[in-house]
Length: 317
Image (cartoon, rainbow, N blue to C red; front, side):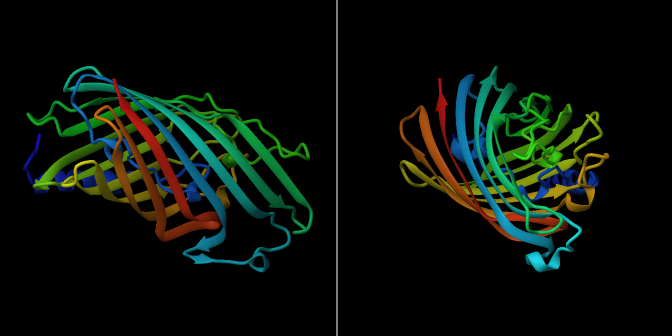
């Protein structure tokens, strides 16, 4: 069904309010990249009752050392400070989206993380590495989109559960930094707002803003509040392929607590994400996106990716 409706000034203002009213975002891995809206990326937000399965694979290679808005070299890091060499993360996320009716739906996301990391000690010579592979923190989010007759304006509310490990070690036996653990150990609130529509024949767009903040701390660590804002555009004039473009932003507060590396956490990121969705069958679609940074402003010294790959399959039952 084609929808022709231009968003009101009030709606655009509400997006900006969510974007700016909360504190700057963060998570332990602030420089990891930005979150794609894979549900809209694959088939669009749906109002048809039923179950949808999304399997997403994301690869992040963090090997560029940055401070503020610029790249730095190892010589720029004082000898009394540890020097991170690289972090390579492969994440497979299983998403189950159950649409109860045109107004209500619930989504379950279960991530499995594989991460290799290397850090040089304070002498910048001794190397310590880690390899983790386990389930991360599970998210359960409900949404309501009954505000309009077109069901194209929705709100999200949910929680992130402390299911991921937060006690993994380097191979030397030293505790792995909390920001590199598969889980944070905390229970977090997730809230969001989204809108989607067509502004012309065969052209669609969406806007989505989410905020995630921890209710508690665990073992002297609390991840900073993080916020993601995404805008998307796609062309649906072809029979089986849909080119798309997303802008994904992330704002991150510093982590806190005695186990947090507060000085080297938090930041502001903006990514552009071109991609494509292919309709394999009426019930199955595949998508692939590449994220490239447009702007990065990290707090302290952090490893950042130069690109991120995200691909997946989405099936409707």
